[in-house]
Amino acid sequence: MENHSLILASTSEIRRKLASKFDSSIKFYSPTADEDALKKTLQGMEPAQLCYELAKAKSLSINHKFPNHLVLGCDQICLLKNKIFSKPRTVDRAIHQLKELSGKTHYLIGQYVFSKDNSVIHEVEIICTMKMRELSLSEIQNYVNLDQPFSACGAYKYEENGHQLFSEVKGSLEAINGLPLSEIFQGFNQTA
Image (cartoon, rainbow, N blue to C red; front, side):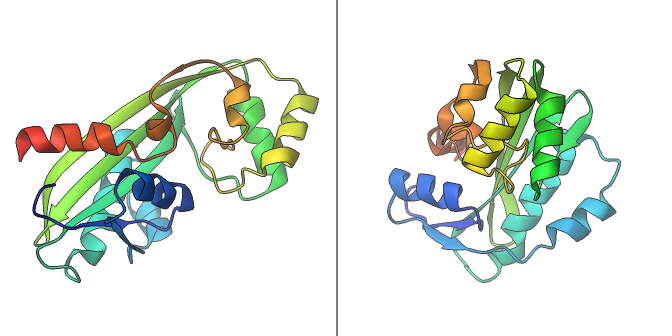
């Protein structure tokens, strides 16, 4: 990353907080890629590839606005077997998702794509393994009322109270929250 300014192509508040803590010189800009339209176009694609395509689209959607800058696009999916869990948006969907994840192991797949001069120059995939405790309906309802995880894939905010839902986790807090910058840059610096 040396000698380059970094633009984070993201609207995620948690990613912006993580980036600011990591390096106060990182700038933020909302990507212009239409994620919902892309998901429809790419329907049926293997989950990790779909995640990569979304991260790439976010990065490239604003790259032309920032010549000579690195632009980082990110995407994360919650995957149980072959089912992708999207942001629930409502109380009922959040409860339903947590009931499905209860007592099972799922994966958070994060894709991180760097672009410069309208070309992808580096990509990183980081997978976290998440084993959720067996949860009662009342535990699920209480949790949803507490954290209101309607814009979190998998219907939990790990960084708030969601960590209490798990019995075993493999992955860094930053990776779970969708922006493991130390891990991403370690790989980037080795290839740069």
